[in-house]
Length: 379
Image (cartoon, rainbow, N blue to C red; front, top):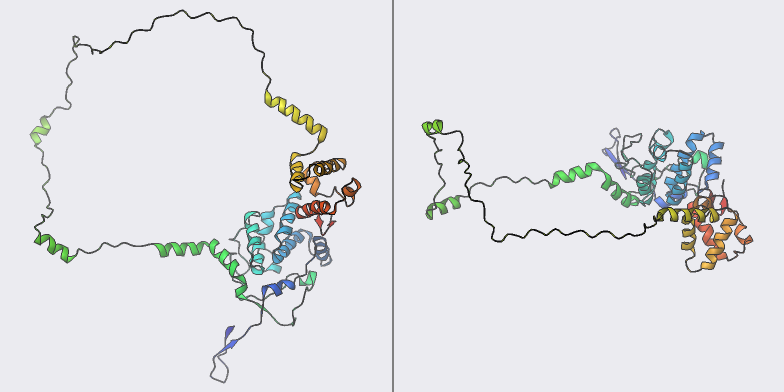
């Protein structure tokens, strides 16, 4: 609801209350199509979006969806391409997003704080960056904004609302958790709380009853004492220092009650002839040589072996079969395991046919690989 000023109407009602059409956050997210990274890139290229902006657009797109898992995988992909994730997240020079950063988009479309915490902790998001209206991320107010799809000309509509031509405003009750999270980060709020907590202790006036009690009980009052005055003659004739007594050579030496006997000199026993011990080999070098020999034979990274053991902790035979299969396909590191070296049907060809085991392996790869989406390699 808003109060609109109408001073030139003929009636006496200067102000008018207008009810705005509101849209819930859940319904607003349905208007954004859910597409894969490949589909998003192709749509941007068909819309003639510059290549260097596609990654920025996709990060804003993931921030609107609030998909932290895809955002983390995309962050790994950016790091492999030697791109600065902090510069991309804090970039605020694009008019399409009201000159705001990815953090502005995130707080405008989410009430769950997991996505904004990811941008803050893992992407070095800067909350002091301002948008086109001059608002910081922690001071942005979404309650009066109108829902607009920034990717309408690129992706089109998702699930359309009932009336496409009606403007829908945000419901302020949908952002309670996000507002609380931003208030904690706002430094202005902390300064105001510190000023409110400052207490000024003024000295209390002397109580009149206490004065009367002092007079009645004959309690002696403190009186000012005269300062000490030194005699100038004594001070001037005093020596500069007090001389010490002269040293007497006949002064008796201190007497000890019991003199400790001096230790008797003893002949040291001659050392027995012993065979010289053989020099010990460096244990670290031996372990390192043994470890390098094992690595040359197996070429399997210990981190990858640990991951397979954690996936199937109760079946040692299955773990050995999976490790042998990975060696057969020259998969020796974690990066090769979640990359596109393993194709569909490779595990079945080596005798691993249990559907539950296969789903466990592919689910692990899909959660950590930016190139494996919806059961298919995208690159």
